[in-house]
Image 1 (spheres, helix red, strand yellow):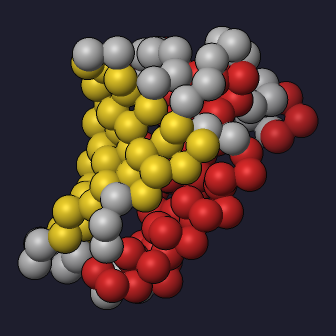
Image 2 (image 1 turned 60 degrees about the vertical axis):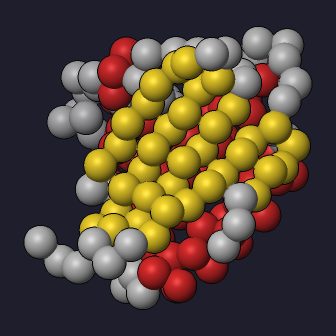
Amino acid sequence: MGPLIVPGTLDSLSVIGKYIMDIAAKAGLDKKAAYRLRLAVDEIATNIVIHGYDEANRQGDLELRTELNEADLTIFLEDTGASYTPGQFSDRTDLHLPLEERQIGGLGVYLAMQGVDKFHYEHFEGRNRHTFVVNRTPT
């Protein structure tokens, strides 16, 4: 599949979800792995739209590219929204508490990191790049 470029709006999330599920099927991922990948990408894309663009008073696109080989599927999600430090949002200390006692929100990056085999974020030349890697064969 070729790259996908969509506006950085909430309306684009369904298009991104379809793109991810199509590439997951092409990669031969099982339903569980495909769902976890879609959730991971959706969480980050939603954060980009809400925090990187809307709350930062910016506009821009989301660009997705894929690399597929025998061992794994890699998704690259790039944007020009505000940069951030993923670790600052994933270090939740209240996950052991009952739901009603936990902080609301803040789990998107955590879910993304847990949903794939490898997750990496970098900011370079005014762009954010999120890399999601899913092993095609069980390890």
